[in-house]
Every structure is written in C-alpha cells, then in structure tokens.
Length: 141
Length: 112
Image (cartoon, rainbow over all chains, first blue to last red; front, side, top):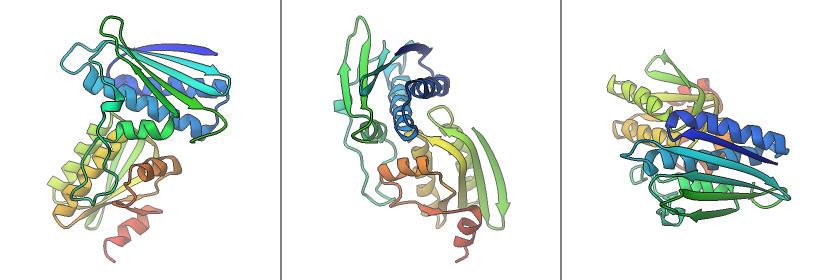
C-alpha cells in the first residue's frame, strides 16, 4: 500500500500531516502505540522543516509518501528547504536538573526513539529526502 | 487546542483540550506566561484531555517550570494520559515535573 500527501510547510499543516499518518497506519493495520510513535516522529521531522528548513524563505511544500511493506512502514518526507542531516542534531539533555535543563533540542531525540532507521539524502536541486523506517511486529515500540 | 483557566484559591488550573504541537504550543506558552505575569506562580496543568504532545509542548512546559520555580512557585501536571506520559518519560521530564492523577490532588499538593 502506498499513499502520498502534500502540504505547504506551515505549522498549520502539522495536524493534517498527523491525521494522514494516523489514517495510513489504520489502513495498514498498524497497532495503536506504534502508530502514535510514527505520527510523532513524522510531526517532529515536519516541524523542523517548517521552523528551520524554510526559515527566512517563502514556505515551500512538504511531501509525504507512506509505504506499507512486508514487516515495515517506510515514510519518505521531502522538502525544498535548507538541508539538515539529523546526524548533526546535538545530543539531547535528558539528565540535568530543572535549572540547567536546556529548553528545546528534543525533537530528533524523540524521532530516534520511535523509528528503527533514519536516512537522509540532501538534494539542493530536486529536494531533500528524509526516510523513516519502522519495523512492524518487533523492535522498538 | 483550547485552553480553559480556573482559579482555585492561590492555584491557577489551566486545562488544555486537544493536541499540543508546533502550531499550538506558542499559545500554551503565552497562556502560562500570562498567569505568571499576573502573579499566579502556582499552576496546575490539567492534561486529562491532551491526547498528543510533540517536543514543542515540552518546551512550553520546561519554560514555565523554570519561570514559576525561580519565583518560588511550580507548574504541576494532572491527569497525564499514557501516550503523553511516554513522551515525558523518553525526554527525561518525569525527573523534573511533578505529576498527579487528578486536578484535586495537584491543587492540594501546593498546600501540603
């Protein structure tokens, strides 16, 4: 099963993007907790594109392709904004007390908690592609 | 997302209905901040009707925890649902925030 979706890179699009992932998961028979994690991972990735990818530019499109394959869900997120490799995200602060705790910087950490693979392919001409892979029926919830 | 506020003596209860994300979190931050500016530093965040939060919601919570505690108050959460709790746990927020099963116990904790 493959479903595709496109919205402008605006924070007002995030709810529709989450609804799309949730509906797709339901159609693919993905169990609830796994679907919630995938919805969160996609939301965080898209929020980053809205906030940073198109920062200072006219908001362009965010494209989403949802593929239900044997034993896994593959979600590809494409944009035409500034490239950002998730590998470059700073390590999250999960331990320090409230005074020292840094505000923000948890988005990519959460993405990593809820998917099994993250691939990033920057392409200045044709758009950046972030691929999230979630194994179904085993591995992380 | 909808925000309802209710005063319970010195405690302000802020009930959030809906999803907290990159779109709605700034409204939530603004609502918390307005209470602190108005002198309410003992705040209960009623999360019983929040089905979803992203890291944007965590940002709103941490900012408010810092602002209230710096003035001797606190932001405490009530009725957090399992899916939101999981996000709080994975982000290390359950070490920082005080959580209560319902509004009554969260409000009462301020006079304990």
